[in-house]
Length: 462
Image (cartoon, rainbow, N blue to C red; front, side, top):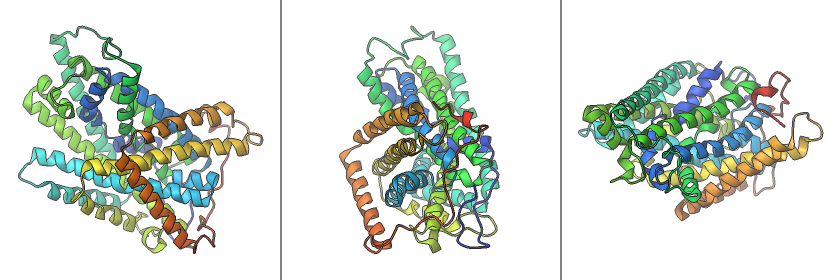
């Protein structure tokens, strides 16, 4: 469905992304090499059953992914949770959901650049982190400004290379295991020290690896047949990412049984040295750098689309965010705003930035599950295929999971998140003149689009 424009003749979001392109964006957003980085922390928390924790996290995220898929099929617009909440929970609530998502999306590009810069500094210590931060922000911004087709091709190449390097790491691990036969092939899945509470806690940590699967919904207006393609892409991104994470974690857990590490934070690097030597460990670091660049491109791309959608609607300044470049059809001003967030990265810790991101992401996940339930309540008697299992029970279970993840955040994260929501409420009061006017509406329709018979099998309903 074509989205709103500011007026006749104004440029619209434009593109012809395929299912493969959208899935690649989602996988690159999650960063394939992240499992190597997080392995030590997850294995330590799960008493040496990291793959089980990743599988449990995959299942939990799949529940919410199904809700995103169902909403994306009905509302194939680029605003993601913001659009879904506006249509199902009301325009004011929708704005606050979009505002919360901004806490996630605005800081994720900066986080991607910061992590990338830390790894580059480790590889090239003569260049300070702040220089790498600026270089990364400029490069990804230029790539995204050039246009979606160029970004798509570059993203595919970098993501493929990052995946290949992760698989090369797995091959080295398997070669190592050929000469060091593990005592048990089942211990990485469940062992004498495993407890359900421990695996659940580790899965909550692993769930952070999946942040960004929802970002593919921001590409709806630039995708071929979005009502069919985007729902499939959402589920595929979680499934592919989850299987990759669990498979790599299983092999790593065979190389290093148990959850005891000298330093869990660098366990992946230590294993790289163990299986391939120092030179190979440097190549593993290269995989993280390449994957980080692709992730930065995808993260900034999706952030600019959300800013554009909210600007187009008028809930953010339209002259800043609601305008597309007439030649490239890119939201250049939104891209420049996200690039400016790199300045924040010069003065903020990664832990604090992570707090911002997690609050916005898990609140958005909860809202989308609530939207699916609201859709069931409104359409269960009038629309075939809207069944209690798919639109009520599974979203309710998914909402319980995402609310649990919210409660696991630190007090600092919750405080920052609540303060951000209060700021959004103040902005909403301003643009509605003290709530005396309605929240600015979308300019052209994003009315629900019931799926055709051909589209319905994309996600099994009941």
